[in-house]
Length: 208
Image 1: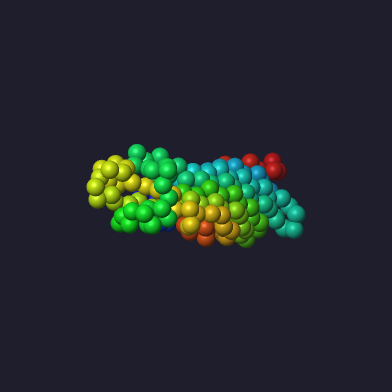
Image 2: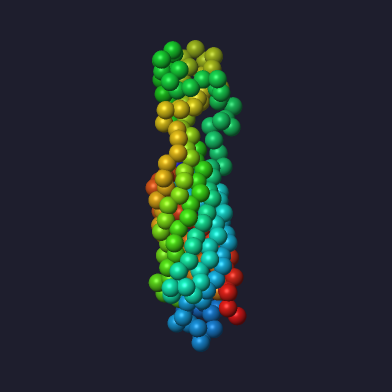
């Protein structure tokens, strides 16, 4: 199943980023005169919430205000949906199938889109934490088995589960590890949909 496969990938990437952050801090391309001071910056990059949203963009800005207070925003979405499957039945819902057909459930899945905003705060010259919330819109799907093989693909068909679909509040938090003066690695966690945040940002220092 794709969930277990990508969750393993997320854990592997997170571990690799944490291991890389420590040696990188000693070799970071920040001038020695600023090695103990945080550098205001703007960042833009890729962000994903695994194992549910594999694509997304992020941006953040950190200034000198209140010792480096900053703002982070992102938008993430799922690159796959059961609606793209050959066996999707657009004219049926899960409630109809349960009431009229009584077919057996084979699998369940979801597709999510979210927009988030968070506050950021430097803890060390190359370490910034963030926490915030956002809006998440999720669509839930069920896959059934048609014993007569008339629906879907060889009897396996997907339908929308309207009763379990809808919007929710997403709570998120995490950290940025600055690997070089121009790049930072992002790790974190989110509640809706639940998963691990992985990202990479390109940094533009606001001071030269």
